[in-house]
Length: 268
DNA sequence: GCCTTATGTTCAC
DNA sequence: TGAACCTAAGGCT
Image 1: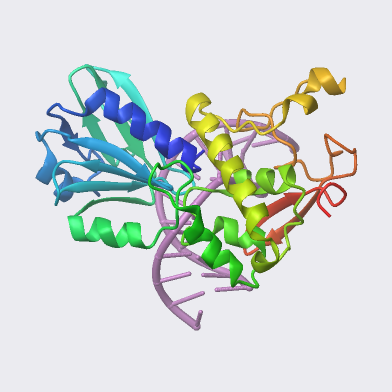
Image 2: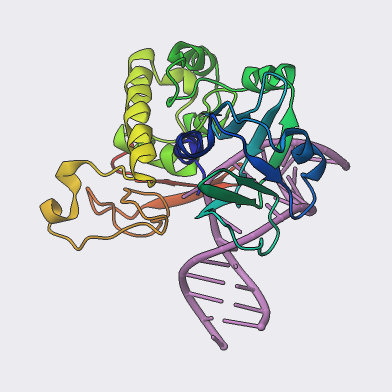
């Protein structure tokens, strides 16, 4: 589930639910227990996301850092909550709601300096006001690596995952193997502003929808369909199926361990 | 029920 | 480049 929009959506939700109040923080599973005891009963000051990283601040030197990885999930329930079921890494309970975290790749307490180090490893995040797309362009402009690989590199750009990568390249007709430095600055600016818009939509809806109005099922005279993750997309996980625009079969390939999808005809 | 797969990252070689 | 990690859902039998 987690590309950047998911984390920003969670940040927004957790801020609304829990910020400004004292919260109980515990680790029923135990793996986060020592850190949890250091913030348990404290006032949660704010929650924010940077790329796919979620930060719950209890003070400048007490920041809970969560990265969901591929499997991590938050669930929530009104208080009083039932006994935790399964492996709950962190349970955070406020006055009206509580939330359980399972299966994250990271859940740890960080100091201010550690948070700064984390941020310095991340490229600009299309979902953050403070993002500077020029920083990403500087990396792209001197790289022979494919744009498909660069879009997924969190040091270049923070928050884009496998779905947004495939979809934004399709929407701009960019062949995925194009070297970063051959993209051109103007094209990059268009891609960036499209990501800003697409991902903001993802934060609002909680799903990834990338199909333009003119290609929607009703307009194209085909049956409505949704990707497994709940949204409507052009090429992601549609290998072998006809392109929604030109009917050419969608291709797939392994690119450094991740599945890449594209239309060889629309993206030339 | 078992097997595969997955919107991710890190570490060892 | 490949394995490891953590969990759940879908497809298969």
